[in-house]
Image (cartoon, rainbow over all chains, first blue to last red; front, side, top):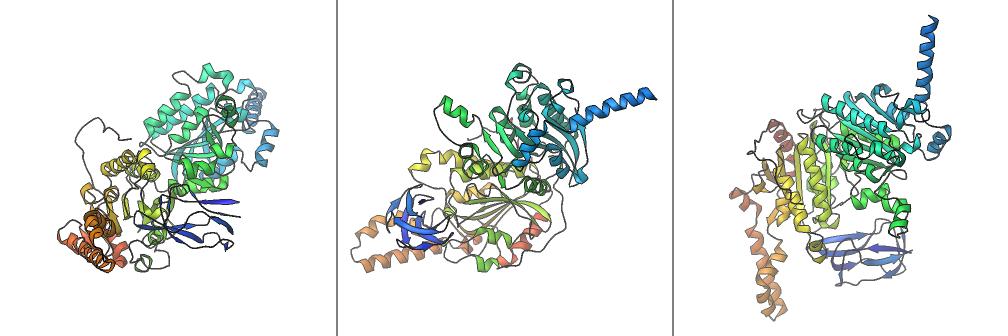
Length: 70
Length: 513
């Protein structure tokens, strides 16, 4: 199981994946909005999404686990 | 005749033992770790593998400590004379005795007198504790190596190639260098080993986690360039060295210009939507000579790019926001990264090019507690006090103190150029309208009316910060079409070549760190 963490504090703008979805390395999993900027959060490695821990509109801090995948 | 031959034989015999380094089993171990013998490293580094050496017979009487575990050499690299110290880890794990330390100090003195770059090829377990009184606390003990490094900083380039451990006090050699290359898997830096950490503070941790090359190049920022082999470390160090003059009194050399890499134009790369990310690396490639980019601290604080490159054959130091990473927002680490890079370029007469697309410094509890204000101040101080040619290009947005950090108009750049996509303001339109009209916006009950009001205020704000208005007020010096930017930069770098700023006398500024 691998964690994908938020790179900075911000609000979840879009969730681009669903539980059970296979993602490729470099695929945008979520987009945060922070400092009025869109911040794409990319998967570091390929894998299957197991949990999604934040919904659109949620505040997340730097280091918070956004999704887990295997 | 017979007597001469006997003398020669004795010399040959001694030299053979010096050149062969430590015991065969340690050579075997190095091979297993994909490490090269110190003399093979030097053969790769120097032009034609040629160099002269001092202190070959250091500690020769000991019998088992050839060259006392360090080779100190002078030779040419890319045609430039350089001095080198290189640990031999087949000799007592490259540890330092008194003669090891004396040899390192002497090669530093040779580099100083000849005003040539100093390279440190480090692979050492640290001090020989059994010899501590001879090499640790004295005037010409290990401390003098670091003292010399500090004195030589900015006088000559100092480069560290880390092939193995750099432990305890020895870890300050890389720390005082301009740049540190680390070989993944073998290079490490730490004050206390994992074994010591477990004994003294009870922490269980691996060497790789605590002081490995990847950790230092991505998290701590103590390492600058992560490479996968020793050969790559040497060839990359040569490429880096080529950007630098021999010492601070000289200028970087100019080489044959090259055309830009084939690819999309700047117009195509930069999105119109100010908030949408794009890859600043692609934009950099669209203005520099193909294949010349040398990324410094690529993996550390990727929201800010710092790298050396050539434009029309001239060396330039680029500081560029990366909207693709953390929106290009400036953080504590990005400030550290830029500060050292600016100071490096300024010390050796490499002009600075700022490419701004920055929403500002990060806000929030986390960064305030980490001292973002003093870190930002440090970056602004370094940029502000740099006297090399300084060109500021506003690519897209430059908001708040982000404008200041990226050499905005108040910081005496030689020119502040805006692309037509530039947007300079205290804050972006959305944030500004919220800040000024939040009470009014909330008071409007009809959502349609509210949206209409907000949109109208956005439009007014955008008009207020229109780039032609700023040009008309002479806040920015020029507006240049993206397709003309490279030609514009080429000319400006040429015309500003002999720029001189003489500062009012003082001892030195008080650093805001």
